[in-house]
Image (cartoon, rainbow, N blue to C red; front, side, top):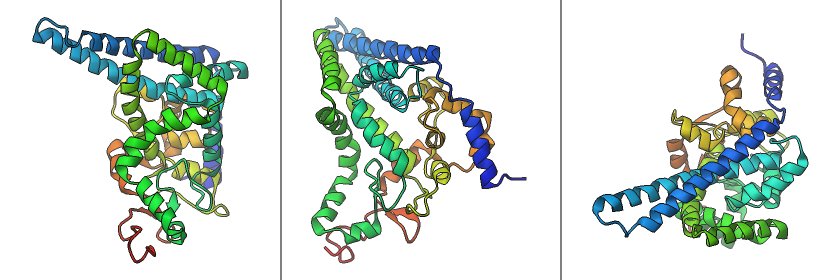
Length: 340
C-alpha cells in the first residue's frame, strides 16, 4: 500500500536524519582530497602548457597538449567540487566546529572564486523562497512568470529578454558572476584570502591555467544548477499554496548521471538536489547513499538527464495559468501581446 503524504514526510525525515551527524574525519577527508586533486590538475595543466611548443618532435608536442587538456579538465572539475564542498561548509554540513567551518569556507571558496558571505546570504534565501511565484527568484533560471513579464515596463521586459538569451545567460554571466559579482560584494577578509591565493598562483606561474579552467567550470556548474529547478513539470506555487515538502520533492530534480565513479566523486552528490532541499544539513558525500538506501521514498522526485538540462535552456518564463515552463515564443518585447 502506498504511503500517504504525511507518512512519506515522516519516513523521509527519519531516513535523512540518520545522515545528519557531522563527522570531522570525513570532513577533513573531503577537504583534503579535493585540495590534492585540485593541485594535481593545476600542476599537470601548468606542466603541459610550459612544455607545449618546446618538444623536439610531434610525439612530444602531442604529449604536452594531452597533458594540458587533461590537466584543465581535472582542474575544472575540481573547481566544481571545491564550490560544492564550500556550499556544504556554508550549510554547516561539514565538521562539528563552527569555527573550523568559518575558517575553511573562504579558503575552499577561493579555489572557485566564491565568497561565503555572498553565497550564504543568497542561497539561504533560495532555500526559503525557491519556487514561490510571488517572491523574487533571482537564483533560478526562468525566474519570471508570464504575468509578471507582461505587467512589467517596456525597458524591464527588454532587460529580462536580453539577459535570458542563452549565449549570455549560460556562457557570459557565469564567469562574470564568480569573478566579478562575488569579488565586489565579498567581505574584505574573503578578498584578502582570495588575493593570497591569486598571488600564490602568480608566483608559481599557474595563474593562466586557473582562469582557463574556471570558465568551463562555471559553464558546467551553471548548467547543473539550471537542471535542478528548470525542467518539465516543475513544482511552482504562490506562497499561500506553497509546501516545503512538495517543493523539495517536486520542485527540485534528481540528476541522472553517467555511471562513472570518477565523475560522481567530482560532482559530490550535486545530482540529489531534491534530497538536499528536503534536508540541507546532510553533507553532499552522503546524499547518493541516502537515495540508494531507500529509493522508493524519492520515487516522485523528477529525474533529469544532462541532455534534458540542455534542452530546457530554451525555457525563460513560467506560465502560471498552464502550470508549465515556456519560451519567449510570442512574448518577445516587440510583440503585440507583450505590449511592446
